[in-house]
Length: 435
Image 1 (cartoon, rainbow, N blue to C red):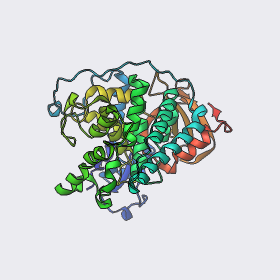
Image 2: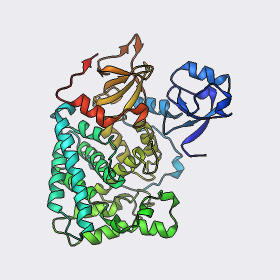
Image 3: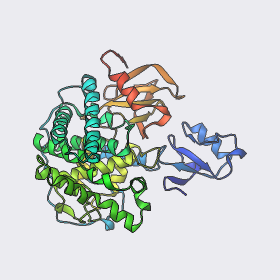
Image 4: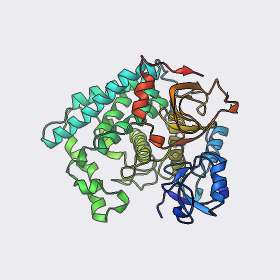
């Protein structure tokens, strides 16, 4: 039984769950043979006639903890009382409080104003990472000047308005997995660093370090890179983790790289409890920028897992991070990361209480659970001819019903393509109807 499938009683089903298996053959029921989403109470009533329990796929639909977890977050803005795992498993280290200086940066533009620049910068970052690999393959010097220029432009853009760039993390890179992972990890890390009030210089070093973090994988056999990490043999795992030391060997003679960049590369795979690599560092032994890069990378791997079609929804990613508080990640770091990106980051596909499907356009910093959303699909999951923009801070009812986000969906659900929607809805020549 796959770990992403859970057995659940019919009475415990709720809307938004994805039924992947029954307790009897599909052919013995009138239900769809390929699995389906629970969209309303009638779907549950029909299931009761044929089944006592089913299996739900938490990668494709809502999990049993979503509603409780989101409610707890909405009731605990400081995130101090939420416990989702056994505290006996946590490691108590005497770590210093994170250096946090909030309010340093203010949004000076909207996602719609940033769309052209955002797409251009993403293309520049993609090209820069490709140039790194080309240089390594041809045994030429890595173009550090180019990498730093792109890193600085990305930092400036995310400082202006992070939402447009966070949306770009929802776009699956059509090139190799490592390219897309590096780009998205950089955006998540910069969004967190901006929230923490890091200096512009530190943000640029963080971005540069992440862009260079995979150079040591150039000589690792593809068959090892392509295998899930939990299936690697001991020898294969040793070879895989050697990419960090190999990266430092490649970069130690490269001019223009300072200590912050190199320590980010060296330590972003270390974990709070010492279970990371290559040195099994713990707590404050891990440099600050490497902690930020590490949690950003982990979050992206949950969103876009290498060997699975669907990643976790944002709320499930957050739940997973919460289970790792004071295990893999320092409590403050997890809490600040959630505040930085929100429960529903820009570009997140969400199910509304009206049974419509929408995509988050922009955060409302005052109330993270009520962002601006673009309504894409009606209650029957048919696309609207004209998208509707709704500010949940200003609109509490729709179609005579209370209007809320019920849960988030994995990227690509219902065939919604974040890149197409981003270009269409953020274009200066496209107007949305306000509701």
